[in-house]
Amino acid sequence: MGLPIALAWLPAMAAAQLPVIDAHSQFDHTISPQHLVKTLREADVQRVLLATRGRAELQTLTGLARQHPGCVVPMVRSKSNAYTQGTKGYYRQLEEQLAEPEFKAMAELILTHNQKGNRADEVYLPAAAPQVQAAVGAAKARQWPVVLHYEFRWIAQELGAAELQAKLAELRSVLRSLAPLPVGLTHVAQLDAVQARALLQEHPNLFLLLSHANSLINDGSKQPWTNVVESGVIGAEWVALMQQYPRQFVLALDNVFPEHWSSLYAQQVALWRQALGALGPELARAIAHDNAVRIYRLEPAAQGCSGSVN
Ligand SMILES: [Zn+2]
Image (spheres, rainbow, N blue to C red):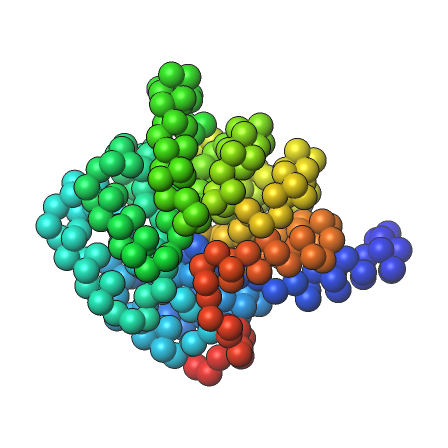
């Protein structure tokens, strides 16, 4: 027997009304624009901040933004072997994207990244590396937030406590030097709630992107991601942080690999709608939508992904 009707029905209705911006996702050359938009519509997402990866073309992304205004917001990509190695091709790719008026944000900058099978290589760059600084400088000049990818739990496990402290110190110095420019951490940087609290209370320009931070996407993963949502519910220590720092959490899915552009996307969005909905309508709306609009200075959109014309 199922739940009493009132209990089953009420949370679902409230959750369905929550507008969602996916503040960070990526697609490669194997994902067609049609499939991408279909996936966004099935999840009933209002907007996505999107970057290319792999061999996806810049023109595919700018085309998507022109065809689906108010739905697809292009982000400048840095991730590539050229970025890791700091070769000329990286700077050329950066300039090419920055010259296009459709680009409105800077995608994540990888600073520390464990190897992900044979599909993503290890990266270990200091924040002061020239290729990082080039992208940070471009973002700063445009008043775009800077988003950093650190994997702190991996650093602690693989390289030890001293290296973890060194990298946290590096992050704090970036946060101080860029303030008041917002600085985001994708995948909550694998922080635990205690570490996150220490950073949030010290740095009002810090925001945490909730990508790859739920047990639905992380189950079976070999990476030590943080599950803010476990079995459909936000952990009590994270709820407390969200209530105390309501402007510093931003929902993102961060699709990376082709399998992320599947029914898994709508399932994750539904999971977040339900989990955030339990925090009350105001806080849920801030984290799912409004914080992204403010932090990324997004223009008002008349229609989301479902309303745009194909
Ligand atoms: Zn990432």
